[in-house]
Amino acid sequence: MNVNTQKWDDFLDDVLENNEDKKKLELFLGAALLRKKTHKFLFILDDSGPTPKETPKTGIGFLIQSIIKLFDANKCSSTMIESPFHVANLEKKDIYISTPPAYHNKDAYLTLKKIISGEDILINKKNHDLKLVKNHDLPMVILFNDEPIHLYENDESMKRRMETIVIKCRLTEKKFKHYCKDMRFLHEEKQAIKQ
Image 1 (cartoon, rainbow, N blue to C red):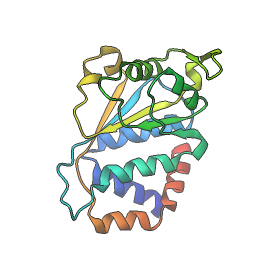
Image 2: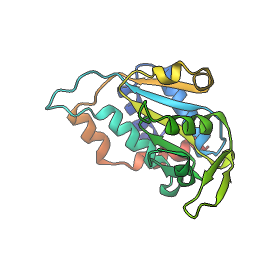
Image 3: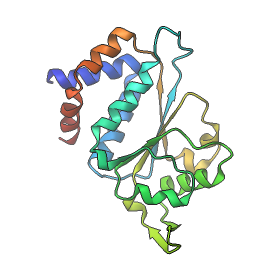
């Protein structure tokens, strides 16, 4: 294994609690990068605890930043889904990564559920024309948060498609700078996943 790929492995070891979560994440990213779409989604729960003012909570932030950098800019979206109308922004994307929609926003939740469940979605475009967006043209989904995920765990159709990994550790400022210093290791990891 080359140094750059080892750096990615070291980073995951620093922020994830166990190898099972590491494997889940890599399988999920591999499926998205290879466009082997599965109708599952990944929930990244940040359980690293309260953050002292002098220590940035950089474990989850760096992981999200890294995942985004693994994908071509035009294949990744983080635009918040507020209604079916926003689904048009997700066509032909490989990955959608965002915080969960607000609990009270039923339109956003039901739209997200359709994407994850493999349903095609009928949207009303700006010119009021209707368009059917095929689910195979929609991305795999990653949500991240530091709050409980009861909304998803209590919905059986969502729960059975959901994988969960837990961020247990914060990066120290020194380690954060170490990983940020040279981001080329992400390019190496992308190539390794595709192989």
